[in-house]
Image (cartoon, rainbow, N blue to C red; front, side, top):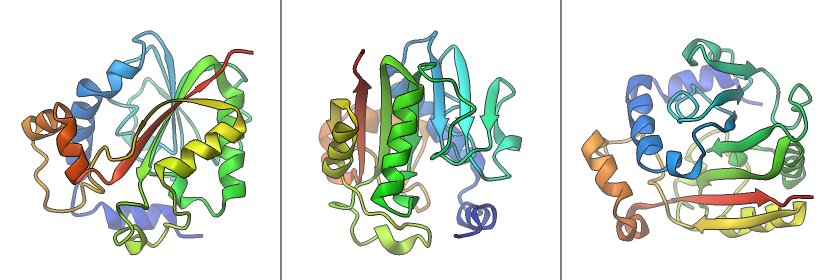
Length: 220
């Protein structure tokens, strides 16, 4: 297994966390907040440096990550669990309204491990809770996909949706091409440009290389 702390420090050394936090604030304000009720309980699975959970609007905030550098980047209101995503035993069953994860599933070792993650998410979600999954789509990012040392599991919007369905989730929304592959390049990311991008779904079909899947846990 790669040294997550060292690997991510090297990977994001040039881009800077301030830029990532700024972009994610715009993404939350312009898109993700529309998917989440303001008073709901949200958990960010494999939250990285807290770019999403720090900026999303919700009632209670939880995060899960094993990177030792995570804690110092989270807002004080975020409760952090230092657990692997396959073992969320510290979180009560049927207690979370929304689980969010971004650019994480591709780091898992196998489909079997991915199934364990899906099972834990299912357990902690309330009835009719939602699982929002974003990640690089192997159909559109097949060249760049393997440029990251810790990418091991190739996934697409179709395969992720199928995996979620077999676990019992109902697929609510699928966007095969949503955001560009990475911020770690020269693509302009000013607040204005990000807002304009979010308002132009037709442009997503050109630049989008990450899928977005929203799945619901059906009420028992």
